[in-house]
Image 1 (cartoon, rainbow, N blue to C red):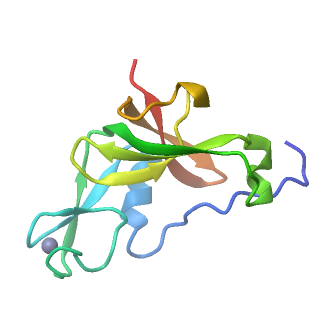
Image 2 (cartoon, rainbow, N blue to C red):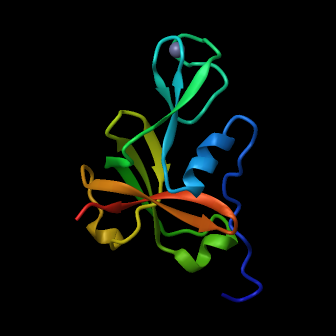
Length: 137
Ligand SMILES: [Zn+2]
């Protein structure tokens, strides 16, 4: 890659989300679960959007789900993504229920379909682990 291609500004761990990224670095997908009502929440938030309690624990999930919806991006919104055009952005509904925005990899954009079974694959952007999904064979 040319030196003048900018780095993608991907999500970085903070105090709240560090366990999510630490698990991802090990190839595991974890979701925050409310310790009061049991609801899973993505994106991770300090308080439960269902019952407003603050406690959370992390639960490993299967990493399997289906494409809930997706779009193909043809326009450059940030120069770091220009080499990837056209690229996809999907919302994957995990088997356990939460929905996670992510790219679908290992398939041509024209072959992505709503309802397609997928599984998580952790890739890296620089040092940061990034969850993406590939079709289940
Ligand atoms: Zn709750």
